Image 1: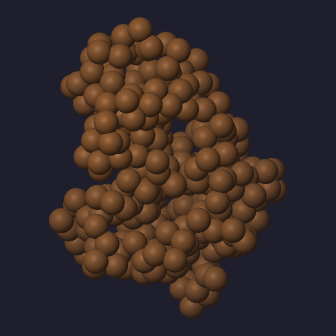
Image 2 (image 1 turned 45 degrees about the horizontal axis):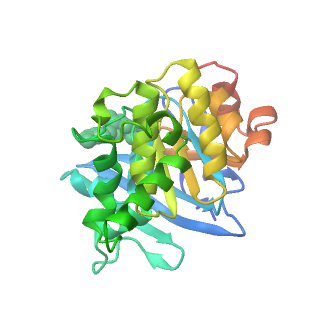
Length: 278
Ligand SMILES: Nc1ncnc2c1ncn2[C@@H]1O[C@H](COP(=O)(O)OP(=O)(O)O)[C@@H](O)[C@H]1O
Ligand SMILES: [Mg+2]
């Protein structure tokens, strides 16, 4: 699906990026992006990127700092709409829905395509109210009993319920970093999303909390389609089934995670995974 007319010699290392190598499409795609270009003012941050997110899989987005991973991820639930100088071009679909259609409400889109950020950002509210926030806004519960049920099951799915069940009225900000991140995941899950986007969700956490989050991501893929940005190649290898390697705004290579990490095709991918830059 890549556009071979786009050939660009890189000034830094003279390695040519000609479209994307590998497999960018999925038989059972939950989201499909084609020929995506993203600009901040007149600076182009994403260059003709096409890829699918396969349903009930974890897709890892990797690459050196500044290559456009977060920018691309934010396109998938229109978080870039909040940056006035940012312009997104191309075709981006959630199943058959054009997610940039004028009539589509981005708030409703973000309930279907949720996002978890690098730094845990619970609201200054109780644990209960953090999780209940989305269901309340979207009117998902008819009464208090139904809301309780959503809060409890979301905390359970996020692997946090056992640790907080006796203090649901305590402030979310009083939890440990790893617990706060699982609270943010519970808050995302509470509105029944179909896709969860995660931008370096464990990079502010200690190794034990990171391992808990990684295990959780593996469980979550049974119900959700997940895209995760990570600067840790070990993490990408542990949690994902597909990996997309970005370099200076280009999608250089994409394929099964095992192949990308053991037998990459492109020289730039190989340089990155062997630690020559990054
Ligand atoms: N809000 C913004 N305004 C202007 N430029 C931005 C903004 N966010 C990112 N960029 C630029 O876009 C490029 C890609 O950044 P980013 O998507 O954050 O990369 P990554 O997540 O891979 O580190 C960088 O050159 C960065 O400086
Ligand atoms: Mg980033």
